[in-house]
Amino acid sequence: MVILAVLAAATTPPPFAAPNSLTSALGPPWKGLTGSLGSPSSLQWLKKQRQCKRKAGTSSICAKFELKPPPYPLDALEPHMSKETLEYHWGKHHRGYVDNLNKQIEGTELDELSLEDIILATHNNGDLLPPFNNAAQIWNHDFFWESMKPGGGGRPSGELLELINRDFGSFERFIDDIRLAAATQFGSGWAWLAYKANRLDVENAVNPNPTDEDKRLVVVKSPNAVNPLIWDYSPLLTIDVWEHAYYLDVQNRRADYITFFLEKLVSWEAVSSRLEIAKARAVEREEEEERRKREEEEKSSDGEVAEIYVDNKSDDSEAE
Ligand SMILES: [Fe+2]
Image 1 (cartoon, helix red, strand yellow):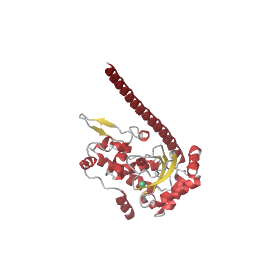
Image 2 (image 1 turned 135 degrees about the horizontal axis):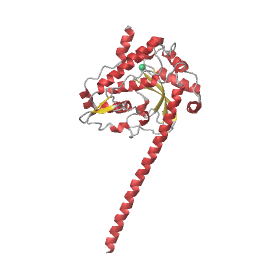
Image 3 (image 1 turned 120 degrees about the vertical axis):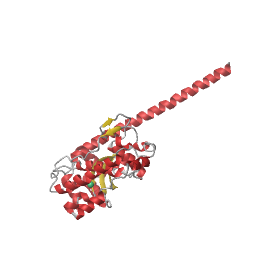
Image 4 (image 1 turned 60 degrees about the vertical axis):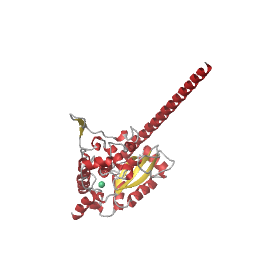
């Protein structure tokens, strides 16, 4: 119990002080931060809009973020992940992030944003604003619970397996890569399989895979609450490697926890569904880029026509 208390204290950030502090940290409403949100439809594919009611004045009251339960009973992952672990991990740690974020954003500009937009805005070029950790940890944990299922493990199939073979050489080599990422993340953090789409650069973070190859699967690891959304990748699978994820079941043997996760718990069906969405998103963004380029070309060619018209007029005037 002493260990649990220490873990809870170490992993649950204290409530952020006053909404006014956040407002001043953000500066004028969203100036300088809107750029980090990307194009208007960026992340539209995964945004869960919040219910907001307009008050008599100009501001709105939005529903608070809620603690979403895992898509199975808390004892459903036994014997590989115990009910007691989920009671603490979901019931205490995950709940703490939700409660803290709701307190942090109340009355601030962040209150009307989706969880994903709060993450992007508060990442703030790596100079994290206080709500970032709680917002990202809520997103990460929702994603983590849905990355597992009772009776999971085994091998993926279909296009997911084809892409894994194409991008890692074989399923076994992919497993080695993600196992290594999860095992070597120093301290607390996450290991991810993600789909790297068709943009190399993002405005608010350093791309960890700045290669020419896009539309491919990558394995990445991230410290603390950071997740691949800030690099504009589409996450497909995650392993929580904070000690609170495994200490009750296997104490300090993180390697054993990773093995249970990959061999007995991972839901390849969830990963396959996410891959479909990520690919559709990449196509949608390519079309958006094309449309934007066409519009820019049309605008610049309109400008050329106007210039010719002025020149002609000038020539007529000289002729007179
Ligand atoms: Fe966790």
